[in-house]
Length: 427
Image (cartoon, rainbow, N blue to C red):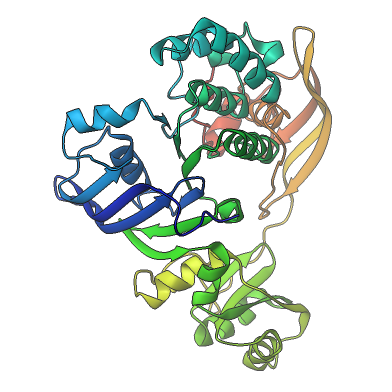
């Protein structure tokens, strides 16, 4: 339920502005957060979300406008200090508000001492929060040895241990697997409802918009739209058409010549069409490529991400023809390469008594985009490290780029590109 318009205002920003030297981070931002609501800031990296949240948390000075938190004007360090005890702030990044060499329990105890939580209350709250987050059995594990999802849940526990009135969470689910994301949101919703807290949360994931009572969509330090999620989606009406064609390249060329907002997802072309019903949108796309046989075509309601891109396009802040879609080359279309790029056969990897990968087999053809999906700890990174020659397999075999993964690790490394996840290491 959305907080009533008459509810107490916890955060009010008017004309807020912040610059880093010549770089504008926040431009003339207005924001109102009411007591009891979950308010979201949604936008891509660099949109200014973190700067807004740090200013509200009292850890970042701003140059323009006014900012009130709990009716206190944050116009000085002294003013900021007066509100900090009433809020909890969790910065962006997996475990960045935690201490790597401290255990789960030691981290919680440390934050409780900082927040002057009495021993009696600490015992009660810690037990409840550890059970709720399923971290109870990992009390003695060092923070640096937790998965990404576990680090974020521990960060949430440490942020909430003193039961703040306002919780500020900066992209708490970035880098967290879908299973842990669902856990995180369920835990947060229960705690907020139980204690009547207010939450300001940022995210780059548009599919999390339904979690918020109200939200602001941000881009380049500005608010594009504010309101309830459904109201924002109705601001730019339209439909999305998804289709598969016999000839992807030719169909894409024709569609991009007619429509601005076009994406390619695998073998599917996805088109946003302004101010058209589902049936009319499908007919328009079909008429655009009359000579190309279509395998399938489906008109659906747009997502919030579609609406966000449409907002940028309408405000002339993004050129849809410049990026977000594959280039079209009909003059000399590339031939799809043949052969197998990766072959994995019954791969296993043990770490002592723990089996991280258990008899995995798959193949990837040249020219494919192949994905490994799974929760944190599912074994995805271990599989990739085996295939790239970083980790030897306990059992199984495979070839990568024509080289045997067991005996030609250096040859593989010369033939591939590999991006390492920030929380991983090569040791």
